[in-house]
Length: 356
Image (cartoon, rainbow, N blue to C red; front, side, top):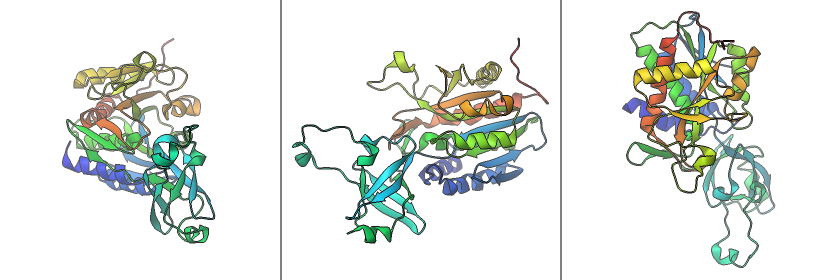
């Protein structure tokens, strides 16, 4: 991966962007895409858009969500310990004994999620998996009054883990879901700006908010932009490690390319075009099936304003919704290449309609 792109990815992943509190990450994204776009803007709730070839047709939306799963301060007890609630799909069992950062209006406050020592826990023969309301954070405060001088109810909390390179194009971070998506749409914009080929479509690269708590930002921005076609980027579950049931969850491997999803919200002609440009670019695609929903922003974009033809491209991700999400950077680089090729394949005024 080119060094400026890798530096952008690292900064994007390391910048905390909890659901509903994405501003810091959105600033990083906008700062990067400005150099590759004709204009940028944000809406009332912080969805961000970068436009290239304004006035072109059709309008192609390249969308990914900016938010990460997190927690929020919910209650402070008399001893100064902080209890939390979820912002998205936090797993309470793996959050115990983690280092965290509470993002307050006066700056970051460090803390740890408390965990009972095994010497004491072994006396409890009825141990159960913890629920989110069981977790408590120790910030070193002596009592409630001291803690309340530092944090407020509602302050978001993220884990302290950051981006690291491992080996063989593998990288680990707490928030690849879905900063890899906003990275990919930004890089697709860069590739299109640098391309010498004629672009017919108007490109709206989107970094949208609050996916993890209900696909909310995608609903807002898809309605506002009214694109003629949309490509959505997210992570998907890699199933190439022990204990994962492939007969139930499919066969998806890291290092074997991005996936394309079939069925439901995925328009068959959009999927066919993705497959065609992937073949042309010699990008290996893996394939996924879906039932009623995809679990991504595609689920709400496709029915907005009577129907927006949409396709979902995903990056295989091991250990999703954990502090050690693991992806292959070569797989990731292929996604903006795929989206850029899709954009360049669009004819002026082209529409995607199911043939009856």
